[in-house]
Image 1 (cartoon, rainbow, N blue to C red):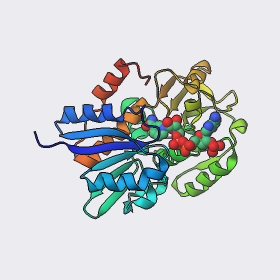
Image 2 (image 1 turned 180 degrees about the horizontal axis):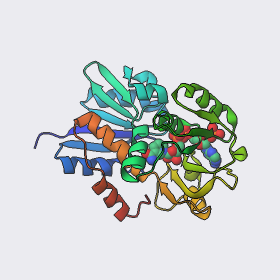
Image 3 (image 1 turned 90 degrees about the vertical axis):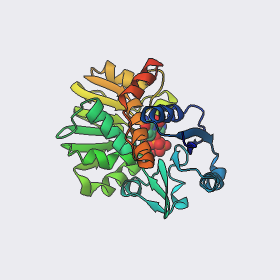
Image 4 (image 1 turned 180 degrees about the vertical axis):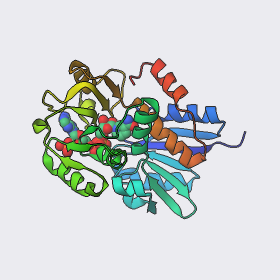
Length: 276
Ligand code: NDP
């Protein structure tokens, strides 16, 4: 067995991260010799930690809250999807320097389409939130040609800005959460409300019998959003565990050139009680 190559996820806090477990399962499944750890990095340590990690032979990093945006100026190049998302969750050590990429959007789309068989094309889609995660999934969702995509945030300014920026990608507009009307085919919660155990201020009437609801948050219990969706009569309601595993698989592929199977990893996490 060759000496394992080093990878890590950096964030603050990071103790809760499932990424080391996911990548260990990918490595075992594909026979890749890697070591993947979680490193707690406070904002003021970001530049020094990044440089030290790669100077000591590190091959790739995942980046999570609160560094996804602040890491951008420390990189040599950005992929197109990271540039549009203005956020990086994967760093690849390339010959020319450090490349920043963003696999969150493709992770959500793979989970929706390949794992959950959710149709996005020609449906009304509601995207809740206008932060980093919303930015990352907006372009990939619009690429699937929904009938329209409405972005709703607590205040309208950030949502309006996003709708303007992505106007060339499809039919997209913003609306205040409290003023939303009509049923949607797909509702994606990209707010941080679930992390706080709360629900965005949503009116009734958005969920119909065929509506699919998807919360980007993941954890051991169904979130307030998933409980709300079920209470409103949604056809299906999911949390973001599948997206987490799929974005990790895309990172693994970028680093190792090997695509792991995600289903056994998802099954193992579900067996441990993580809510899909
Ligand atoms: P940001 O901090 O960048 O954005 C947070 C967004 O949530 C903003 O739009 C903010 O609104 C809104 N918000 C915060 N609190 C509330 C609340 N109580 N009610 C309504 N809206 C609220 O966070 P991220 O975009 O990075 O992350 C968002 C979520 O996505 C998190 O739960 C994160 O765990 C999850 N995520 C999951 C991934 C996965 O792989 N499954 C990958 C990436 C993210 P405002 O602008 O008004 O402040």
